Image 1: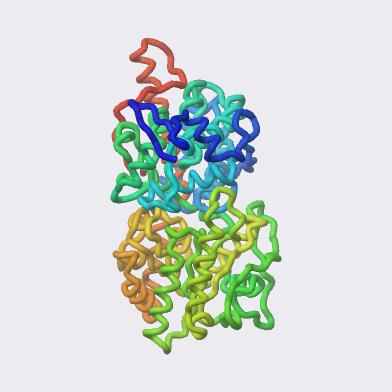
Image 2 (image 1 turned 90 degrees about the vertical axis):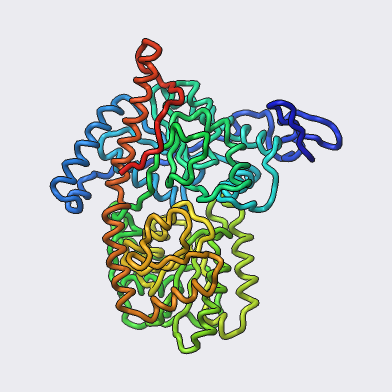
Length: 542
């Protein structure tokens, strides 16, 4: 199938015949129930309100007053309106973790904040994964982003929109997350919602793939009133007049980031099979979000040769999705280079990620993990004994968070050798836990790590020698490791917590309402939900 473009209308050429997008979609994706609207529906994830008073001891008197004032203003602006968040999965990845925690605090502050997760099909998520790679500047599986993919994308989102349009009222704020949801924007704007798109991904140096991704998403980009990016470098030309920069955050009070003693961390890791069991261990217990103690009961699926690491073995750890852009194969090869060059080094490597079938919107996880296994099997016997591949249980999200918490806290050094990275919240999490971090100087990682101060940056992500040298430096210099970890913790506390993020979201609501008021003034009427594109410059919220 090829494409024919005449004016602004793209048509597919199938077996020499020109056909409209919808028919191209039918032929390319015959299993999708075309024309049977309402087949796919978003689901609501209910979020329990959390009081924002937990931030008071951390902010000091002046900071606490400022947060209260900003929250009070936002509550007043949102009176009678709902703040909707829409994304594509309820679990797996930083976005699915960040949304419920921020909404919990928003609800605790008196804002009607709600979370909807759209429903997709395997083919839809293959298309959006292709978009994900494109916006990072990569080809992914090399599949097209043409009329057939456009038709499938629109049809799935049209189905989901039917349910959303019955819930969203004029003046409501709708925050759409990432490429999977952007196609909902035009219809939501039509019913008077104030629509913002939040892109958690991007590329520092745009190329043809990035341009291809933005072209595919152009109708949604044109419709939204504001667009939020993690870095100014990610903003496409289409959005310069309506872009805001808001950096992501972690919830330092969540299960994944709550305090945990070394003894409990070791007990959890021993129970899951990630380190060796020792007699006399404490119970592998953590505190759930509702304050109730719970026990880690599930084990990890681990590929290894031989016994688990001893509890005093230094561990190099990367925790991330099974995604080629996270470069788990590069981590494996870099560690192998380190081990060969330093035969007396006792360290072992743990590559950990979610169970491969657990993340609905990531159809490539299984194949990416299998590629890592192939490379692992190619290593000599002695190296395979020191490299452990772990798929962590995802059935219980809080149990999973406790396991990740334990693994990051137990790590001697945490690495994130990404080839591209939207922001890299696993870096933020490790920094909060005072772990020394070695990470690629790409994307939002550069906004977190000050090289030599809050971590070590690998300037060329493809340079295995540079990566191995940085890891060795941290493993062998305990004073450096302690200093990097302590500085990293303070940096996260100052820049990347929920209190700052809540302030940024309040400023986002202010900006939406200002644009609505300006549009109404030009029309000579009262503000409505519809906002034309204005002249808002890229702004770094703080």
